[in-house]
Image (tube, rainbow, N blue to C red; front, side, top):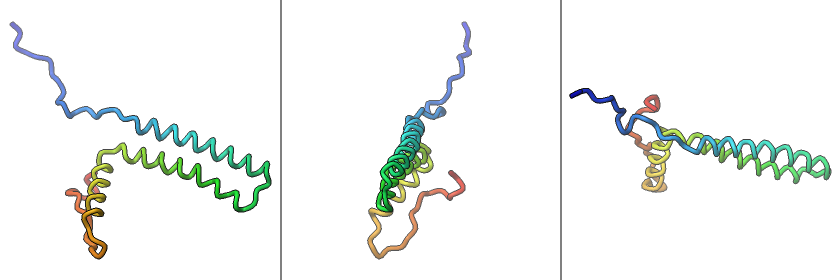
Length: 107
């Protein structure tokens, strides 16, 4: 009888796949096409300065893509959760720094 068993990886050794980077790529692509469409429409309609406000739409898409990418990293999620907990618990006059338990270089 063979007493050796195949080596198995510990349960937490592999990082689960995430859809966040894919969502970020899609949001970025849509944002790029939105910038192109807005520039073309503003040029065709000879819009004034107030038409430039429409550039906020792709800006929101790019911001959402960046948040999606950064939120896919475990260290960033931990720090955001710690900051949120600190922000909710701290009163308006308190100025203590949020405690994450690790230094910035440990991430």
